[in-house]
Length: 160
Image (cartoon, rainbow, N blue to C red; front, side, top):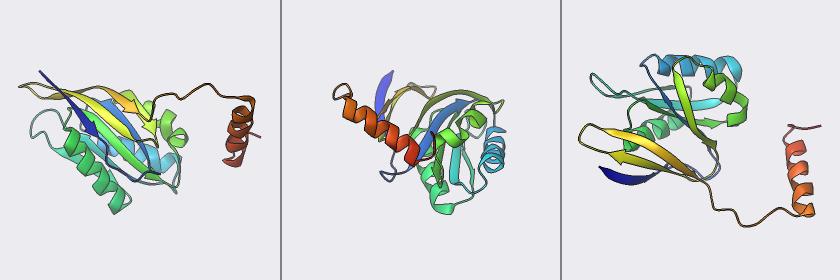
């Protein structure tokens, strides 16, 4: 078995959700879940089929984001994994909806940070072992950092 580290290629300010599901129906169900939860969200998603033709299946409402999803999913080529790229919204806006899609087994990350995916590969195929989401901790927040965190949440409208 070989271990690989695959970087998700995306603009620095773009959010993604990386997960695992179990059925080709995932593509249509994820698409429907996103548009019914946040209709204004622009997104592209791709799913790595794990049997039969083993294709990267895709959908979305934005061509650029859909291309990013297809390219990154194919770079991963991990059976039953999916990736969603989004704009005009954050993962927190759709994360519970995505987790409640019947085919979804797990979420590896939901982030705007740089992401590296730890992949195992053998003669059968590839699987995601985990992710490196962002950067190593640099310290413990100070009182000023707490104030800044609270201000940011209120600026985004997540707290009153």
